[in-house]
Length: 54
Image (cartoon, rainbow, N blue to C red; front, side):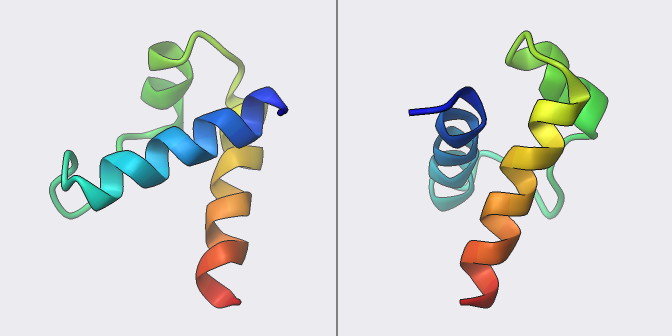
């Protein structure tokens, strides 16, 4: 599994568990949390966005 898919799964789990209030943290903060680039975070968020629209 790719890193961005792992991050997408983790963010989705956190959303389900209501670990975030109304909004997700900024991309920069997520990149810091997962020790990765902002580009990887953007890719992970796109996966979640596409999942939501399907």
